[in-house]
Image 1 (tube, one colour):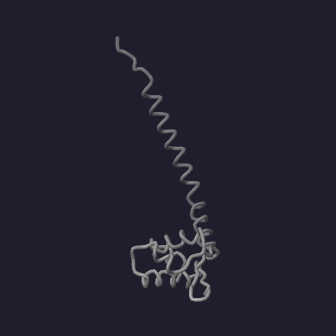
Image 2 (cartoon, rainbow, N blue to C red):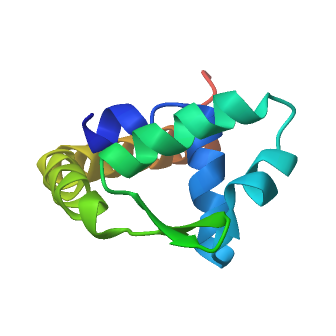
Image 3 (cartoon, rainbow, N blue to C red):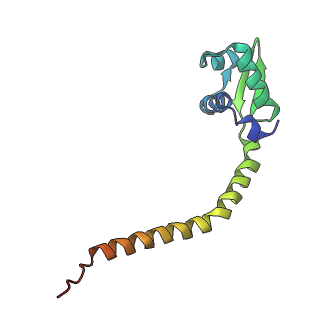
Length: 115
């Protein structure tokens, strides 16, 4: 599964945030949610398949840790998208500021009275 599709799910994003802090077992992760352990296991499998989560068996436990490397291509794409729009958005912001200033200035000029 593609990274963007994997992180589209709220539960999977929350799992990633949990793993950002420390390595956790599947049970510890499952205890953080109001969904079944098999459902959490399915989410972990999706994250593992796209490389965002790495698992390691220690004794009877399977420990999970975050690996952010697969996010790099998505981050690069988002940066290009942002760069594509930053110029036009800056121009729009400048135009909005200019329009507001002109309205404010025209509102502060007293009207001439007719004699």
